[in-house]
Figure 1: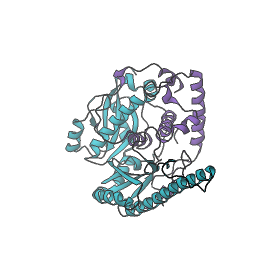
Figure 2 (figure 1 turned 135 degrees about the vertical axis):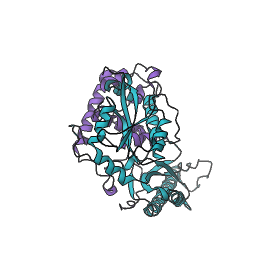
Figure 3 (figure 1 turned 30 degrees about the horizontal axis):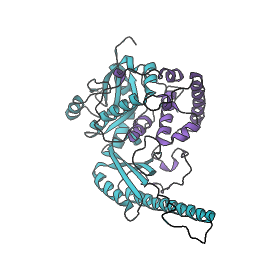
Figure 4 (figure 1 turned 90 degrees about the horizontal axis):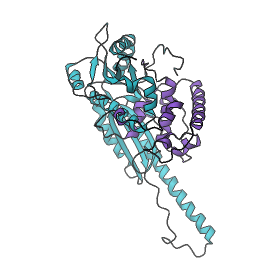
Length: 272
Length: 145
């Protein structure tokens, strides 16, 4: 690790077209270095999208340390995604997982050679498609009626009145979930007309989950580029007539969720 | 990774943050979900060995999923980050224990069958949703072409 810089790889694309090279030339990488395209040693395809990163921040121990820092991780993730997003607007790219780092450019070229068929097959499969995210939310739970909202039925004991109120809240929740089920069905049906693949993500509920309401569906669809508009419009209408629901369509994304490649050999004992 | 957690208690110099002007309006949760958990996994030379990135992924999953659930599992790394929490007072040994526990959990996870291909949505990896609320379960989406 005497070298001052390492090579960070973002994605793999099929050809070094002038447009792609020009676009890459306008981009800045995760550590501020210019983004470049690398071609393999033995052939001209596929190409890797790379930039230099300082060894002091990206060698193994440093990465371990930095990745524990959510602020650093966020900056890295956004920069990584920014490069991929800009290139995906021009051509099909296979996004590599965050923090795929090589000792130097030659090692990346060798990696391209070693996996040429794998990459080209993957790129061919995804060519002309984009990923769209679909998130369905149940809007914030209806506010439990305060005691002053509806004077309790004098015929009811306080305990019974409480139970009745709880029952009402529970019914409202059940209704919301039934409506969500209905909307999810509609989305699945209209998506089938446009998408070629489907992937399910975890629902987002934690501190990083943005937006009000409770996320109940978090899916990704692989959609041909010329169906994006129709997909988006139909999906946005899935909640028509179903109050209390919200649907978000995100993207187009590079096909992150559909870029799974299965190398013939993984070479490490820790491969899943 | 256990010692790196300890190291985080010292704040990092700001120059180590990748300078970047975000261009994307996508939410951090959506981005992390994709860049950390999806995409092509291909061996780099700087092996944040797969185990560690998996550890990180799981932590992030929990952060995106449910903090309460994470705490139940003893994962509270964000509480050691002054920028995320004011309670950074745990001992290193406890962190190491937690890490050990996490590693064991991951070993168990890895012992499971390999992840099913994404093209077979019906067979998605079983993931218990944190929380106990009922969920909408749409029927499987469009089949493969």
